[in-house]
Figure 1 (cartoon, one colour):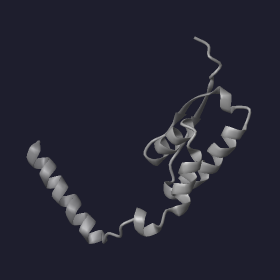
Figure 2 (cartoon, one colour):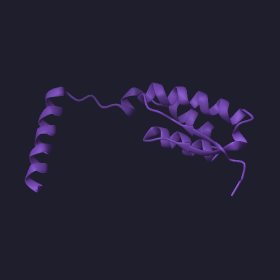
Figure 3 (cartoon, rainbow, N blue to C red):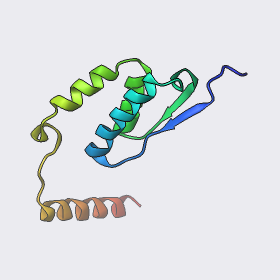
Length: 98
């Protein structure tokens, strides 16, 4: 079935910096002559959300959300020793179930 949608956009990682760069990319893509040909937007994690909002024509909502985001709302500081002990506990729990 040929519907003229022969372009894919693949969004890669890089955490918050990456999604901000991809926001600009997606905005330009939607303004370009390629947009009507885009049949797939692929990504994982936050990139999947960005692709979905773009496909739903809600890229302005994505931009507003990202620009209003504050570090305390997105990142929770965690001490390395706490992470190590929780990772060790998870490893013990996994071993116990095997």
